[in-house]
Length: 531
Image: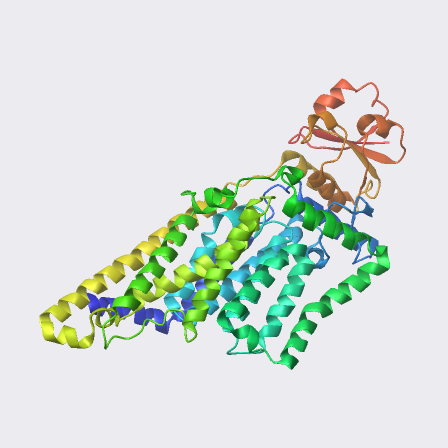
């Protein structure tokens, strides 16, 4: 009876797999795009990338990025992620949604590609993979899937490169896919792309594939790597010579990997373990535990397996190399960034994908494999123990498989709820950013002017200076040219606007008596003045 129920459930899954997979993709899309523009714009990488992309559009210069219309020497990333933001601006206008669109799309594509890859080996695992991507709290909350910076596109390219690596050498053309993705990842996230080379190089060495690549294949591979890089560098060189590349090496590579506390982002070697894998508030310890226990169980099974049982074939035709590739993908990235001096939580995000893939493959096979009982005991031994024991054993295993499947659903749904609450439902905007958005538009009467600010920001001692997120909102809202200096500089200017909170306005009302009130909304404690 139980075995019949088990068989029926998974036959329904097999027959309706395209429908179930499509529904899971729609749920992941909801997690990516729903309320995408509600959360405040982060003042660091997200706002900086937004300003860089917006000013590229205004300057009609798509290779040299600027910040407040001066060449940017703080954000030392190549151009690909800015072009992704420009795509969002072209499709949805210069808005917060447009800023984040390409990041959400990149994460959605990453999840779908990962699910399709697992689904070829286990259909239950393919759907479970999409569930893991929905329950992936940290990247959906901070600095990846729903943020307008470079990391989401980098994760997509990293994942494509690794999946292509796992499919090689069965499909030899995938070697060039790896090379191209490495190149594009470098043009997205700079030296972080080195992790792709480290994982791929070790994989080729340990599997012996390094010595099976023909000379012509090496030539095509090197072209796939260097052609986009040469094109980008030649274009950039026309703008400022070797200056940008030199700073990429000195600051973005050497300082971040060797400086003990570069920009204040330091931490112990155990930083990522404590913050991610050891944090029970997220799904990651559970997924990591499944991978460890699953690999130990698989190893034990291979040692004691009786004759006559079917091999599990969990990782596909090239199972041993596939398992090694997933281990390298996780281990090299996780340990590599743990050893670097600079620690930021989103550096380890690429290491979460192989955990999801490995856990989905192990669990998908464990819950759906009908031949598990025969494989554990061997057909001959079961027949000697009699038909009753065989039936009982299979029924017991079916119960365990159904309970495991139910447990997987409960676990994933629970952490999907955690993610939905923390990353989507309960996020909030910033009152002054909201005021910037409603107070001006590119076609309003006072657009395109110099703009000053007298509103307390991130650093109270710098009253009168534009924080990065506010500068981005001011640019996309009114195409303002933002100037520091607050009220004092505003009073010395002409044809300019001032954003001021009402407390400071009351304190300096006499000085500002001759200014016009350009915008006032009783819902906000701010005023826009003009002169």
